[in-house]
Length: 292
Ligand code: PLP
Image (cartoon, rainbow, N blue to C red; front, side, top):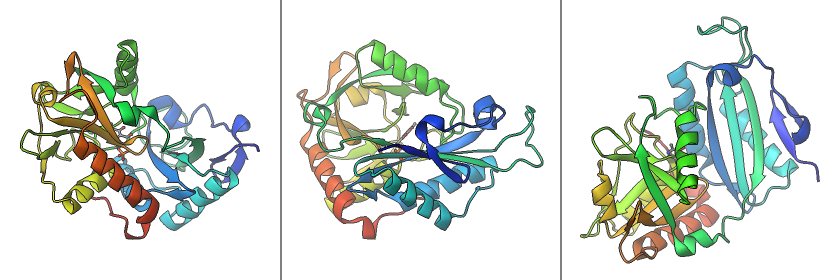
């Protein structure tokens, strides 16, 4: 079956999908994106992703190319057309095509591209074994709350992780505090059973998955503290995990050279992952929203 992409008003074969060379996304990374997981043919937390998309667009003063109801229909149509049961939908909106000039163009219309990819959310060995992460300095700009397509720092971070044989890089700010993973939010469980993750200010991207996990933790009567933590605190924590739309709730078993806990995925992490999977499959009707 041919795979389709959605490009500026048309569904086109993925192999033929293209944008203009003067699209500002290509020239300036002047755009934003979202990655929404699809499970059993349905989106997980779509509304929350669209709320964050609005936040990103608004922060950059990019006018949405279509209304939110229309965007929802287009997302659904692409998933159906591609016969996607389990995987991801990638959505990117840029300020549009205009002669290269830094200032906002007067006439450009924002441009939109969507693609899908398959991913088996259930059968990934990394959940059973957990993953290793490295730590690296966070060299990004000061508006990390915007899900910008400007991802060069994350490209370097992911490559550093891959070079070290690790799954993810935890980025660390100038004061020694972990901000987040290169494409995930970072969580730890303290010795007295409190979940800790960084406060959702401009220093991180406020994750949709993490936002949901926070609410699910409350259902399990687990206390969540939103505050910064250092690398050392993470390394000596009882459990650690990552959250993202791609990996849901993923146990970390090693940070740098240091084993976390007993080196196995933690029990609280496993309970949250199970609850998240149930929420993703069966509770989208009561989906949690997203706000800063
Ligand atoms: N932080 C960063 C920098 C990310 O790129 C991502 C996801 O791509 C996340 C956090 C997790 O966000 P979400 O749970 O919405 O996927």
